[in-house]
Length: 183
Image (cartoon, rainbow, N blue to C red; front, side):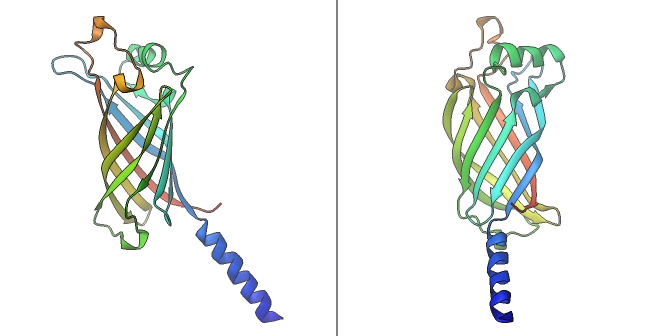
């Protein structure tokens, strides 16, 4: 009888471990759409949720658009009201997979991986393929990547009045440290 109880406990524990996800609620997303010789157009959101399933390499991320902060308050207002229309499109979502991901192979030295997935923004969805640097530390798993998107691909219109001051090409940087989160 004790053996049956012990085996049951071990099986339940194994199922619990296999459902472990790695999570960050303070991932950082920075975007820049600056043009040389004009004022910097850059914003940071440090409250982005990022989830990794270490068994499958699947990832998901959610950024609330009103969480992006600019140096200039007027830029932030224009971003939310005129460009991204945050009331109508309140979030950006990325879902994808880290190709060839193996948690056990990670060390403190960053390793290169490819992330493929879909970015949903402003009511549109686009495929994203990007290189990522991933490492392991005492805090968990660190992921960083850079990629670019075009505002026009997401039906984000840049008025003629500011076209020369604002780039259609938006450079995006993502940095996250994910820790274990049992579900």
